[in-house]
Amino acid sequence: MTFEPLASDFYAYESLLTDREKQAIAELRAWLEADVKPIVGDHWERAEFPMQIVKPLAELGVLSYGWDETKPFENSAVFRGFVAMELARVDASVATFVGVQNGLATGSISVCGSKEQREEWIPKLASGEVLGAFGLTEPLSGSDSAQGLRTTAKREGDTWVLNGAKRWIGNATFSDITIIWAKDVDDNQVKGFIVPTSTPGYTATKIQGKISLRAVQNADITLENVVVPESLRLQNANSFRDTASVLRLTRAEVAWAAVGTSIGAYEAAVKYAGERVQFGKTIGSHQLIQDLLVKSLGNITASLGMVVRVSEMLDRGEQRDEHSALAKAYTTARMRETVAWAREACGGNGITLEYDVARFFADAEALYSYEGTREMNTLIVGRKITGSAAFV
Image (cartoon, rainbow, N blue to C red; front, side):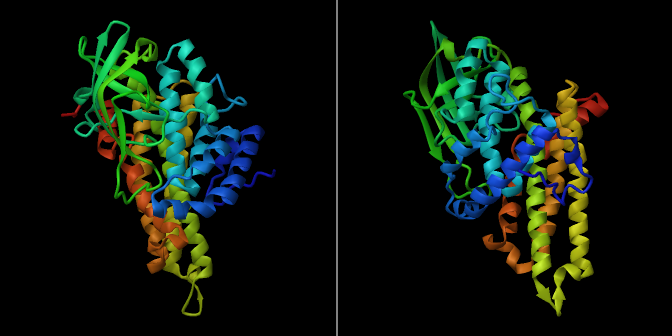
């Protein structure tokens, strides 16, 4: 299968990929265009996730990249970023599903699990045999998760008893396991648990009425005396610092997804501009439309440069919290501008699902907020710049 560079990759960052990585991107892109793009609008409108895509995602290796136990070939963080971008370029909900499954759930076990836990669970998650979710955010604790976590874990012999609630947990209506982060009542430290969703006392209820990422199945979770064996406690998760190690990895990939969302909206607007005729010629030949498209491409190109660099730093072991935080804050802000300009270029038709732009426009709002709001990521970077923490 021939790899074709994207016109929206204006400075040819894809040239950094190896031939094997380009081949994998080409295969993924072809499948997304043929089997996913035609159905995502309908699923978005009905607020349903297309479960039929899980097996192909696994077969393409998308749920395996990044982990020694399952990766089909040696690959870079830059390549994995391009995978996230390709997914979001077609649909941000699909990118979010993969980010939860392969990033947050598998990543928690890879970073914080024991050797035995990694060997047992990572292959199951990579094959799609087991679907995962990540339970950190709570009804009363979002940005202040480090200090404000209210879900508790109490050790009783060889088991732990969990009580509390989680909110906005992606994949949680159909997940087989959820990584639950809870505060140990004895030492007040945050610990992680692999919780089978069939455990008595565990309940997940779908959140209704969303205007963004409608195909993502977010849920409210309640935990009422949920008993988990010590063998399912993540053995290397002993404080919120360990939780943050997982978020550091996934935050950069959300920045990549923001670039993909921008590209999806931009490409839809370019297509529309070449087809829509007003005043006797296509609107793409009008100066004001070209201005919107050029500003959009500028945002995309600048954002691509940032996420490529932050992923290169990850490959070299140099990426720190402030690096991924700046990437997430900047690219999502530029994404918000870009999807608005793309919608503007499509005029009234830009608010219908028929032309795709509306979906990207709406989905951008969720990406802007999750995995750390712009404000919280700003404070992380601000702390590094000034040496002073401005958190409340």
